[in-house]
Image (tube, rainbow, N blue to C red):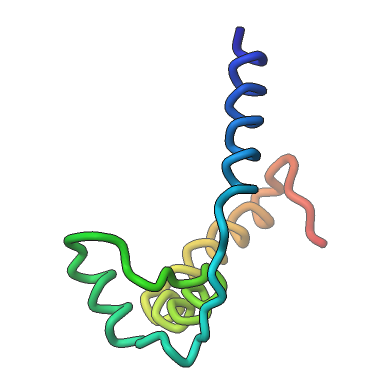
Length: 91
């Protein structure tokens, strides 16, 4: 049942995605201050126009770096290398 259910959901999701039309968004029309306000004080409906994911990542990365988000991952990586954690590969 699990695999059948997954396949049915996957098929429905793909067919809905084909019908969903994406509107082109001009990044010059996006207001960074408005986006930050919506993130910090979320309430109400979704932002219009929708903000593309890559734009959001570019917008938020400096804040994430400033707040140390990436530092946690670096510390874990260093600890894993130091302890010779199994499954860790240094590529």
